[in-house]
Length: 249
Ligand code: SF4
Ligand code: SF4
Image (cartoon, rainbow, N blue to C red; front, side, top):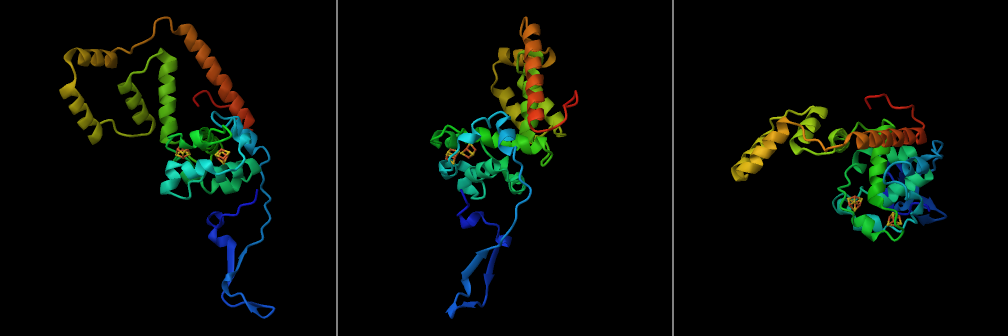
């Protein structure tokens, strides 16, 4: 399906003539708007499969370009350049360089899932947005996002102990993203929580902070989870034509 929306045509690809007369008809200015001819030579024929190999992108092939996702999108209502339908179109055609031009806004999806509920084809556009953001990271087009760092810290803690301890997740997230632990908003939040927290609960929290909680008999689950995650990541990297990840990835 060709692109018809003028808003999606880059301004540099539009051409008008201040003064143009064709066969005696004055078509100056707006009336002589043309789209520049261009030859696209950088197709990535595997791009749809690459996105489909990442979590959330599995159903990208089902899209029939109705636009319901974009029409219902929370972020699109604020920023018209945020356009899931268009990005799915680019990915399915393999227009990699076109998608990369929007790399700085694709990650802005807020996971509200309005698109998911409005999609008539069960594409799960929210998942596709996540897959695209991960694809951009894995291909080296964008740095690892803070939300990915958070997910990684969360996952690592679940795998390690079978439990989540919020304070430890926050500390790990700050360490990964190079942020100081003593942030004004955090100190203020902790102060307010401390004021309202029942004494017994505060003791439990302090205990969990010092002694890492762990699910009993977690060892075998941990091995199975670790194996699954490693196999999954290896498959994803292979699908994207990337070398195997180093042990610390
Ligand atoms: S989940 Fe993301 S893409 Fe879908 S409507 Fe919400 S912000 Fe838009
Ligand atoms: S709503 Fe679904 S089918 Fe329609 S454009 Fe979006 S992803 Fe494609």
